[in-house]
Length: 187
Image (tube, rainbow, N blue to C red; front, side, top):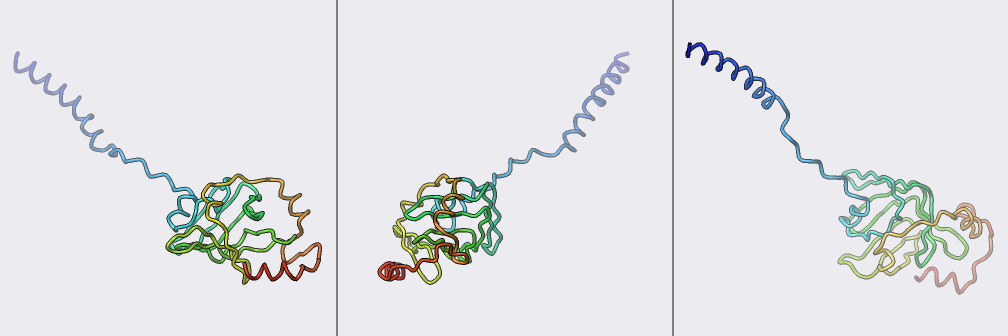
């Protein structure tokens, strides 16, 4: 009888442990949680650029292995730095160490006109300056303006209509004063 009881107990243990063992073997091992995608502001730091180049309304971005990028904002907007800067809903360019080249989607207001910003760069090793290239003109701005991420102003329609158009659609075709033009090319 002892043999029969042990036999039944052994079969019972076998049928309990076998499914448990199989489920442990077949269940996937717990994977560590994937790292969250870095923010566009973190990517700027990796390339040696200040975080505050883009406004706080970035919804998403893409960067490929060659540095080509696209940044998507919630809506077009404006940020007041030393100059008023316009950000289109889509900004694109090519990231490099210390620079963004082939830039599209950022404009700066100067003398009632809006000018496309073609490049943003910093000195290497870093100094206290950020440079905006507008055509053949480089405008040197203080780095402190770009150390924090700025909020956008959404009332850009009013600002753009009061301040003129882009270079392609100059609204108030007024001649620039000679002294101001000299200052523009030497900044």
